Image 1: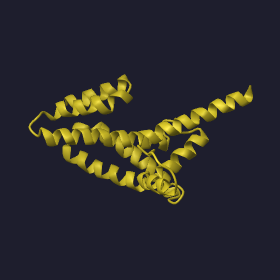
Image 2: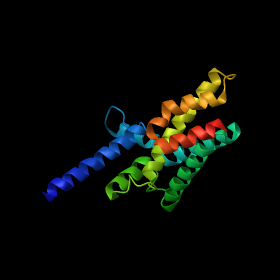
Image 3: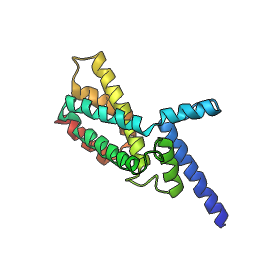
Length: 172
């Protein structure tokens, strides 16, 4: 009985890891050393931090319309930065962070770096959608474009409270 429970826990941990990695598009077909090097390059902690910090600058330029998103990104960047600063070689890749947290059973906790990584990836996805809309239709309503980008990227992952907070923020 106990072995079955342990096996189930291990399977859940593996699926959490796979979901996190797929969310970040870290898995790709192929095998061998070349794939491993590619995966490490694509899962660089510093690259995600750099892109996320640049995104903060872009959001600052857009203005207070996306304040909640900006605060979430800043919080997740800080969490990831703090972990990376503790041991930059150990936490050089996002994969290493996720694997460690899955093995420790902390990946699903609210303040985990795994969740920070996933939400940073989602925020980047949202921002890409928004910026693409802004480029295609510069004369359209910012409120409408934010709403469309939010509905297609972040809303599926938010509960009703978060969705309501974003709606209120957009209305202002």
